[in-house]
Length: 422
Ligand SMILES: *Cc1c(COP(=O)(O)O)cnc(C)c1O
Image 1 (cartoon, rainbow, N blue to C red):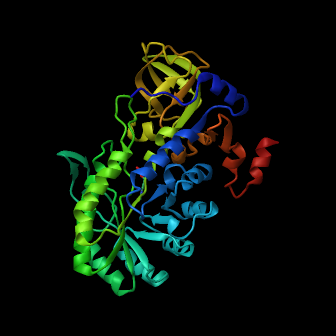
Image 2 (cartoon, protein in one colour):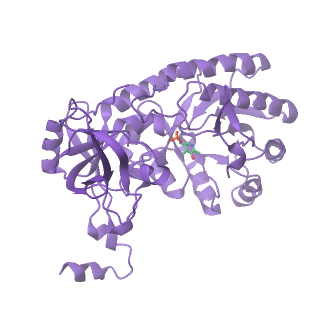
Image 3 (tube, rainbow, N blue to C red):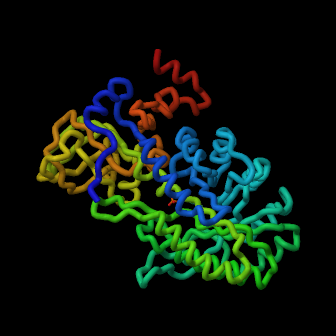
């Protein structure tokens, strides 16, 4: 599928008069259309809820859009829980899916009434001593080994730090029940960024069969099954996007095959998607400031890996459009770089693009999830602004860019900042 930016060069030239590059911009229309479809895809399940993975895009304005479609939040730290509280999420609208959890974060999650999803067997004892066993509790399952769909290996859960083994899960549910838990959830996350409509249905089959087994062995009431995240997006233009309606139907079919005949037709389906909810609806806009020719052709932009870490960290592909040159031939080979003192600070390597000039604006696609949020301050680089392109065409700043003052604020000797700016 051809990748088209949701802003034009003309729009960006207007925006930069007020908000200089680089910035992440989000497409309200796209976010809403997709959220509506997710809701529709699981409408067959009365208890369905998507808990948006806050870590993907922790911006209150964006999460509030999703909340209009019934989404809650999935948090894995105290700060993310605080953010959820700040925007008015409460009780079972919040999922706390954390690992290596500091005890005080269980206390805080419990105070908000969040559903706690335990990552480890030892945490049963930890929460029992700290807060008592909540009436509703969830545990994360890790089947070990390799996870494959249709003979292609998707991921390696046996090598992942998350979750209970099956024996621990069954034993854990027995203990939790004996200590007073009434409603149980099962959670699992087996593969990341899957671009196949079969991931959720395959995972659902594993979890639904496990739920039946657990119910039979422990007598626990399974209230929900949480398919977690992992539904991906095609970062490359030749990829086919997931069809969430087909995914929802695929889960429905397994539900009717496995849960319903076992008297479990009241189980709610939960999801914790991040990437699928936001990824395609964000872009990083950056201006070309330098061009360099040595052994290769380099395009230097005013963004860098602190604004978008995925290419540097995972070698991830992000499509790039040179705004205003959408119809020109891609007959130049470039490395598109940032200015960090790290040679992995490249948004693209050997990328075929139209002939670029200084002052061109690049639109780096699919930065709406795990983009801004993975930012950091290496080399004294500051986080960019986040902007929202509203449905009516207006642009709203939904997070200002960091300033040097923000950078200096965490030193005890904050007056130091006053000194340097004298
Ligand atoms: C990261 C994460 C998610 C979201 O994953 P996506 O790939 O963005 O959908 C959901 N749940 C948990 C526990 C996670 O760690």
